[in-house]
Length: 261
Image 1: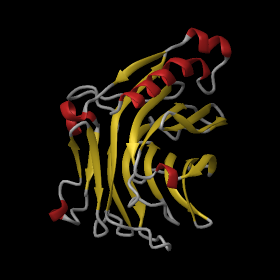
Image 2 (image 1 turned 45 degrees about the vertical axis):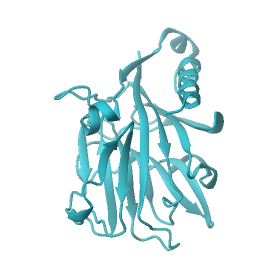
Image 3 (image 1 turned 90 degrees about the vertical axis):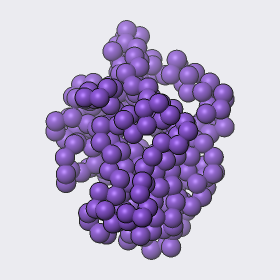
């Protein structure tokens, strides 16, 4: 990762703890972000994650592995022939924040968490008319609805990247995807885990040292049951009508997890 991206992320961490979403001014001054997760692709590989969902339907053995570490990056490869267990969609994802061989972080009600990382979205990973998620917050377990999704969505023919509270269909923010193609983008995502109206989120994207979007929502529901678990990768519907589905990939690097304590 370039020095400029490291500086941007470090500066953001120092300045934004006091502006954490959903917190009073007094609480924000008293609390601070404590790093809980700092994996290395070259050192930890896929052991950085709680689970790995690499072609779980075994639809394309010749393409294995679809998810792997390469240098300092984690790569998620998607082929047009790949299929999930539900054959109307595709999925190559990892979940959770593993801290050791048998331990992983659990995000529960009342806690505030933050993720920072950099992502490289090639021009072959396009926005679609249906869903293409590249990050999700979910309750663990099969068949559960996503709580928060970061998605590549085609809106009136325009390629965009957005953050949405999926259960209540609340748009947090949206910006053009085209300027972010074929370059590294820094992501800063914060969530207060809360039921009913006790939750909040903040979503920041930076590119080339400049803020592309800084959007937040408070008084929202960010909890279903049990706990919240992050997911990264490519999860997309085959129902796209814009001809945007291609063989593609996504790169992630410098994943970090922080808790406000």
